[in-house]
Image (cartoon, rainbow, N blue to C red):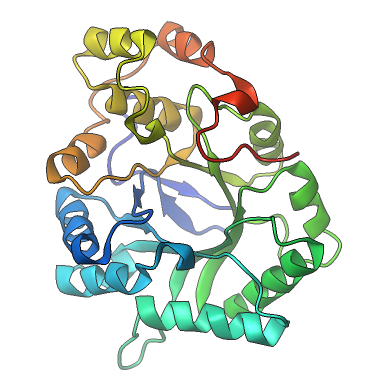
Length: 285
């Protein structure tokens, strides 16, 4: 597997569009450092950045892309909507505003995002329906290439069937790492060809001294973060590690020159604590 994966590797979504295997998360990255962090990530070789309306740095992500000089078509950009606007049209307006912040477009090309997600199911069924139908309209008008969900359990994804024109969602982004493996929703997504993105894959560095993870890091002459990111990649997930430290941004991308053995993966699988292992949010199935 080590020879088959690289920083340019992609996964094909069920709409036949590709998403890079490794993303760069900018969760609450402060505006004054976000542009620099994104630029360093792009210089390092990342081609996938993940933002959200809630993060308040969509514009900074877009600024970094423009400053990088890399063609827009070579970079995969994601954002998320957290709350409904009160009607499909009002929510669609919010979505368009995000797209305008991120990609100004250019002569002959309309601005777009590659992936737009519902950030959380917590607003209730009507809000979920409103946001999903607005996302479908955004796809229709070219403002998003793919759409999906975040923090959705099986029941939430199944609910979309009742009204969705686009089903299943292209992506479900959930908290995933050895201590929170969320096996029910992961299995469901795999069975329905929903690509799984893993947020907090390095557990916000809270497991840097975990004896099991440290032992594997020493075995492979890697850091704990690199072991955890590699674990996600070998699971078939799309990890989204976040850092504003240049050396760690580089380190988190250096995960393609080694491979965890079946035994290593089994050891990490054995760390699962279920819902108790979540540091952010385990989904409600």
